[in-house]
Length: 301
Image (cartoon, rainbow, N blue to C red; front, top):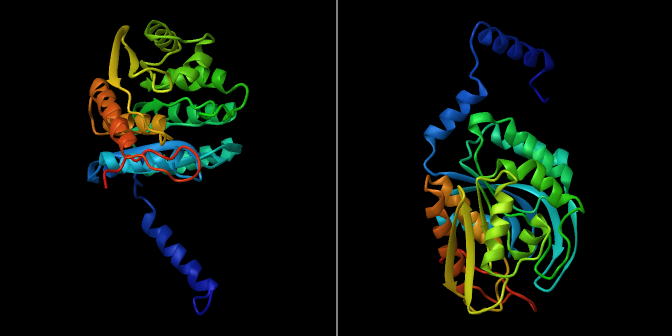
């Protein structure tokens, strides 16, 4: 300890303890209320995996949060081994680590919205759900992008991941944003066309989500249809498909942009429109990075 002796250190600790005696220390809720009131930006949190290419996962989410004007925080669930051509594998960081990351962050920072991407394992799903359920009324708005496999078909989750999502996290979600393949896995049937998308969105809502947006960007045709089920009502969004070979990360950008918009206090419908607009502009700014599909770019400059 250098010239600062152990005896001196004990004296300092004694003085501090004496000064604190008889005082009331602020509770965690009080600290979070002060943090919320003193902020200059809304805060969104991504709970997702690392994509070393930066095109998807945490990197894409944080770029999207920045583009939407909110402060981005991140909790890592897994590390993927991928480039623009292929996914060669992945490794979960472990449920204990995810819990520790979440509890440490959420004990200090007031988060307005959470975007969940790749959870990886059922254990991680249950760990995330336990933390969020324990927050009570302070629980942030939750948007789930239920990542189950990569665009080239590589598995990005344990065999029981879809079941764990349905049992533990989807019931906590304000919105779930599966693509056609993910929705098919969640409901256990093939999806072809808008009618099937509407039926699937209703089925996933019955799992407990407040709303479900089944996205059709991975489908075919000149028109992209996304189907929203909210409070029993079905809304179909249509837009012209933007042809581009560089389209890696569209699902991440969509869900992150929606979460960011919700963090700013916008309604669900407003946030879905904001997310679809952000994806369209990000695809238009996509660029080649390697030999395969390059990333979309949510940032405008």
